[in-house]
Length: 245
Image (cartoon, rainbow, N blue to C red):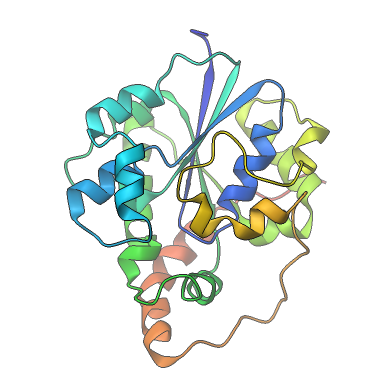
């Protein structure tokens, strides 16, 4: 469909991003893509991630080809794409994002680090990607002449319907109640890495309960990473979208 409207949702790991992909993918008028640059990122950087070889074998490793895929064509009026800013390493094309609707999904770095460390033994600021998120945000702002929308996962969990309605309104999409619940299990759009990362989302049928207002404690090594990430997170959070009313 030549006139498909593309939503590029930029998010770090462990940040409600897969639940959001479920939410948008549950609409009849929307298809979904799961981290299309992941294989290219692993191939270009040599970084050791869980299921690295399987991800590379299943995906496209040429970033230029991935960029073309992100622009379609698609068979539905909308296409929701789950992207991670740290996948966009130096030299990867970003000009394709100039013609799509970009949204940044953020979560407090302390929550991200506590969750990420349960799945991955070694963690760095680059893994959770706040510095790179700010850089991608700045590049898109320059290309489009306006700052992209920012939404916080904590706000979505606190009131999914209100926040999704506000987000849909901001991007020119009609809110659909189908976004609030989905069937448990894997989906065709899930990346091959879902076997490692998506155990919770495969058991889910909707958004989880709101997170505690109390931030988790971190060991000293993770607390140092939080201190690195916090200024970039706070700069993005200052302009986050809030529900109307």
